[in-house]
Amino acid sequence: MNDLFADFDDGLPQREDLAAGVVLLRGFAREQTASLLLAVAQITQASPFRQMSTPGGYRMSVAMSNCGALGWIADSQGYRYAARDPLNNHAWPAMPEVFLALARSAALEAGFADFLPDVCLINRYAPGTKLSMHQDKDEADFSAPIVSISLGLPAIFLLGGLQRNHPSQRIGLSHGDVLVWGGPARLRYHGVLALKQDSHAELGACRINLTFRQAA
Ligand code: MD3
Ligand code: FE
Image (cartoon, rainbow, N blue to C red; front, side, top):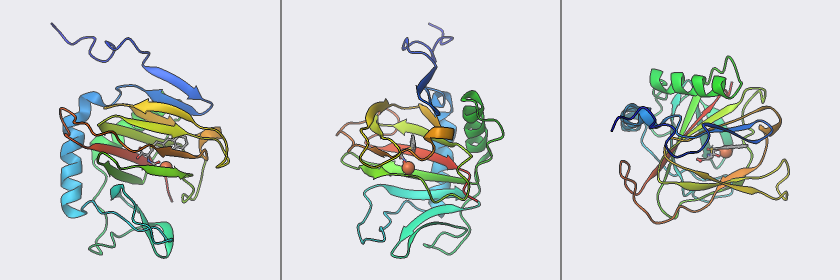
């Protein structure tokens, strides 16, 4: 059997408009899995995954690292972008070409030309790990979209509204799915439900999410 239709054989459309400014590209990153995982391993050798503490003193259950000119950090002082990894005081690892190319082509496919991310936040989830509802608002300019690549275990993503108390819709994100959001959706609340106990063929009991942002 050939794999000419490997990207389409789940019978789902390739591009799904979930809401104004929110586009889901199912399986868009699947064929790049090996190179993406190799790059994640190299990045996290220099800047290891760590669970950051919120300004309120809670330890996040998601483990994080970054690559690019800047990295997103949380500590007792707040949330911000920083040019150096506070664990080693070195610059964050450079953004690999495969990351940049994939993020740019996903943004273009979703209708956002000239996306030039300077940060990739790498989130690692184990079963039980969740991400509470929040807005991404630490970036200087909200006119750029955000691109998110999901690898490994599936997750249920919550897409809320522009206010915390607005109802949210649930979206299943699987291995290789890419979500792009911008424009009117850029400041929508969102989160990730606790991962189910499970194992993925390539990543084991793990979900990796790559989030690309233009922060400066
Ligand atoms: C849709 N990460 O790191 S990315 C984050 O899966 C973060 O690790 C999640 O939220 C993760 O800040 C989700 C997908 C995402 C993020 C923000 C959105 C989708 C969005 C904002 C509005 C609409
Ligand atoms: Fe977010």
